[in-house]
Image (cartoon, chains in turn yellow, green, brown, blue):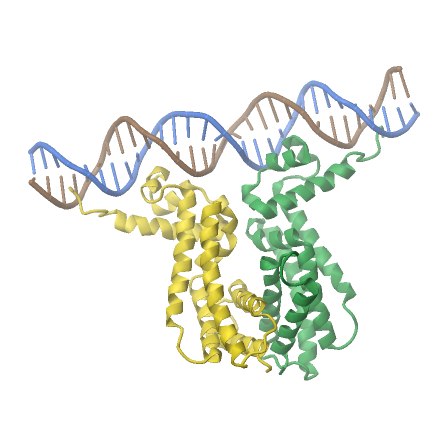
Length: 195
Length: 195
DNA sequence: GGTTGAATTGAACGCTCGTTCAGTAGAAAG
DNA sequence: CTTTCTACTGAACGAGCGTTCAATTCAACC
């Protein structure tokens, strides 16, 4: 070896992914060219292929990385009752999503631009997340804490409601993050319990 | 005039919009070419320009038409109390969206592919819809029927929850439309009222 | 049945796309 | 100083893009 392995690659590689994430989120995967990404990184288009086999793999890596980080955050789910766990889940979902807007965005918008194989893997990871939420609802239902006619539907409804925050929340807006979390938790709690 | 005005256009025009809507929803605006649309209609690409000034106008027309139909459906909002109106709203939103999946989809996915001017108009129409929902929540709040800390946030949360249905509902699935509407209405009702 | 004109073709315009690859630069190792 | 090898350039490939337009087709009217 004549040079520290990846002496530049250690900087350029992450930068490529950063810029790709930002551009994919802003303009959409199909509308962003490899040349645009390269320009933002400060490279010629050909150099990108040092860091990704192709454009599709770049998208997939970004989406998979996002889902894996989301899922690894679930390891902090506190022990305790389903009510406390659900509150933690609501707050985690909102705060994580708001601090990773681009990742959330491409994971919802770019599913259809994945190859069949890649689509399956991202859907699988999303399913793991949904299952984690449903597990809490099922536990609460079994203990008589929740009144939910269908736990799967309730899971999807809760996640959908929480996802909505990303479409309108602005840091400079009327409501603080804490208040947004608090109000959503109140709505979710009331929706899954008698009151 | 030597031919009934638009003797073919009466058939071809709507077909162009139908196929464009379907393809935009399936693959995304940026990923669909005018040649693809033309092929599905049974034309050469150039002929599309008899029916639309350009690709952007085609997308905008589809999105505006969708929003206008959604809004005109609101004229059937029944008179009566806020609770009854909110239930109608929940059922209308779910059933309309499920019967116009492609239109809903492009209105959420393709906003960023609109020119600034067109984006403003679609956002305005969406705002009118949101205001209609919020008006019901405000009315209920004023009469002491609802307990909502922030009606705008509650509006966005309710709409987001209902939008979620389109991502997972299948006609051949486990739950009937009526049951999905019923459960969502229960959740919304409990979320905005004490119980 | 010839005339009219809307509907459509098919070729062309300049441009951008994702990807490949021979060649080069330049920092680290010997 | 020479060697080594990673990082990168810059040109090229074939393909497809949105859009334009002269020429053509053909159903409806007089």
